[in-house]
Image (cartoon, rainbow, N blue to C red):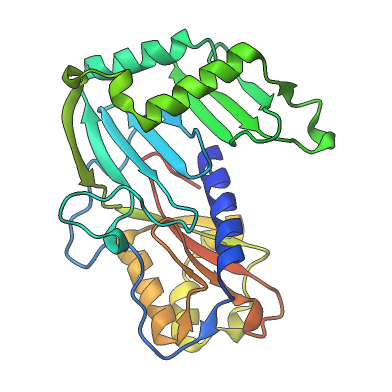
Length: 293
């Protein structure tokens, strides 16, 4: 199963992408895939990491802290493109970015988050209308304590969500303000490397929704490249190396299948208009160090 953060991120991305673009189409023109690393570009290391803190104060903001002090983050636009771009880069080639905290900086941030009182135990909060969706996680020992908040849960969810209190609302606002302006909680000495640098993914999450595609309807180059990934069929998700994902994307381009959504956060192929027996949506997203299927 996909991690909770990945489920929510992809679900939101798919809704937004579907609202803003047409279905995949046959197109003989080559495609440049947004923010996809060029061949020969070295991936950021280490390629995996133990997640300590994950802050999602809005549906389009991701701020992860790992055990080695790395902070991998981004504030995505409503069109799923990066809004934070390192010096010397362009928006088109930018995905996630990274910085690094000192061990003392990580501990200071953890202490500040614990002081909000939100992370005593798992919470599922009904935030009320006009509030952002949130998903925060903080590691306590071997487990991650999760704070999950939605604006207006479906009535059938009422037993699983509790109405947010004034104190909890204030704490959620503090976290949102921190992510917008980290210097308000973290002094300059908390950073081992404050410079914003590109995070180059070593892996991509490749997943399907609405059913597995009818491979007999795929053009041969795409079918040959796709059929080898058995876990996508078994589990609707598989982690590929960036090189494997590149080959698969190139096979789709060679077959003349253009993406319906081409963004740094998600590259999406909606096969609804390709006369498939079963509508299927295939999407590629850069994997964060803790992501797994």
